[in-house]
Length: 236
Image 1 (cartoon, rainbow, N blue to C red):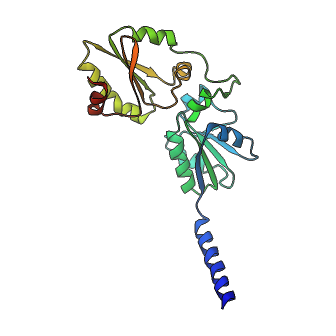
Image 2 (image 1 turned 60 degrees about the horizontal axis):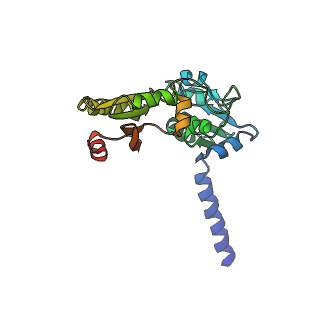
Image 3 (image 1 turned 90 degrees about the vertical axis):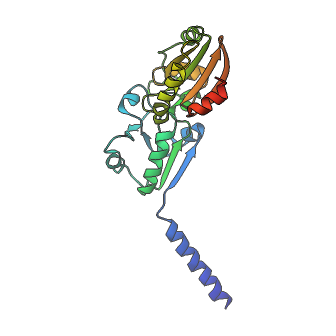
């Protein structure tokens, strides 16, 4: 009887394992762990940003497959599902969605880089030209300081054209600033055009907001926010 019982357990375990074998392995891992996996033989590195973002700097040997393109599924299907795939975007949002879709498509292993290329460059890791971090260019810290000093209150919105939460929040911020235009200035900073500034300020995710009073930072917020909450938190 004992042998029969043990045999039944073995069969049950085998059936359960077989039932789970079709799913892929999807994980979000740190920049350092992501970097370490780049040395794994046969690994596939996928940049799911737009072609415009890709040409301004990407990880070495990364293939560009735009997550927002109509042929994303068809392009991803050309990869080898049996080999590990490493996926990244600018801040981690699109790549997480891409990794989930790739898992559904049957990829054996998919790893999403936490924080995306913003955290990668923030950690001083190289882009395609081999220099650490983002290329110089865009607004400098001194430029931003001059804008901060231009009004009693300055609200800074760090955003990007591709960022859906940023786009949804933009009308909210513009309405908020419009009602207070006599004392509040709204400054918009594009993360793609100001990579060095983003690195200097240590901002690794967008949307991101800062409110200054007389040149001093008095409030900051990470992520999307509704006008009611914005009014409550800032005291305006």
